[in-house]
Length: 255
Image 1 (tube, rainbow, N blue to C red):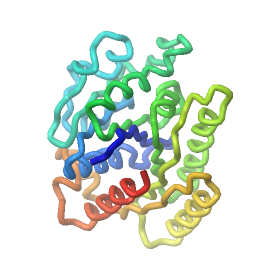
Image 2: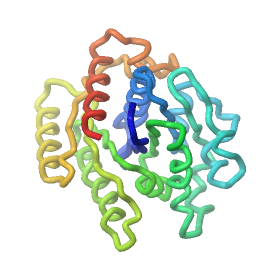
Image 3: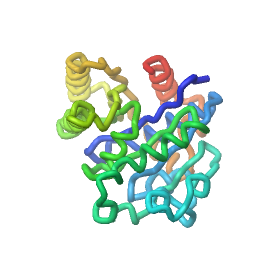
């Protein structure tokens, strides 16, 4: 078991790069291996909450931020892992949380939750807003998923720069480290090979020397969403599940 609890955000400003699927798979495998795992859905689209059959009618992270519910009230104990659900109301956070200290609300919540969990994962929306800044501040580590197209790779660089602004700024609001890049929907094509080379070059120039890992393209990643499950749970013996288990091995080794 881990001696230290870890908060890990899965994030990038680019949409459609499998942030939610990545979060679900990593969290599910860690839970299968005996760790206490919590996932916080910080995306106002509520995709992760819906994909794992979370209850959208109960207290959410939005309610916690507004002190309308306790953390204990908001935690849902699901088959795959524990969850604090998202809410469409999160779209109003930038207009509602205006005090300077509000950006630390997620970090404060995670500090309390660390007493009960080995891993806390935060799934983020594909947007640069206060919620994303809150996630950077709360996190010990950042995992950046991407795909093989140029705009997705650009999102890796942008995300990394935003994290470093908070880490290296005057107030050092974040202590997060870039843990790794995940190249999703990988295929044996020239475009994917170029993207992989680019990520390896970026990693080599990054102080933390983050890992670079590929997840093969598989329709099963989409199929399990309708089943409210994870490939590592529903398709345990498939190669795509082995990919995600290899990813978890790398994460545990890297932290």
